[in-house]
Image (cartoon, rainbow, N blue to C red; front, side, top):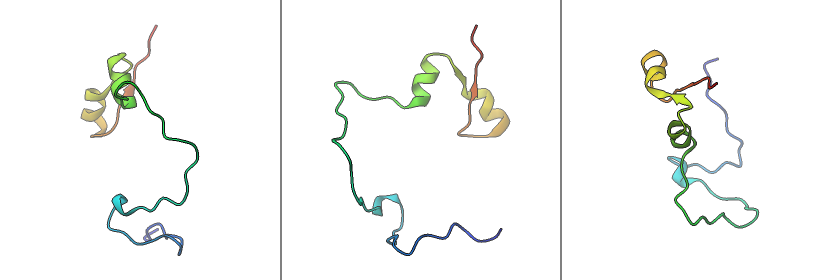
Length: 69
């Protein structure tokens, strides 16, 4: 219970995710003619989540899904 996640020996060391190494990719990266939005931004614009209420109850980085009729 007190041990952190143990990494596989083949994982290279690094200070954070900027030191990650790409092993392989598949396909070409998607190119959009618009600026892609985060899923939270889309849900908020559609009025499907309540971030402020969830933050008061559970803290940051949480949201409640709203029931729509």
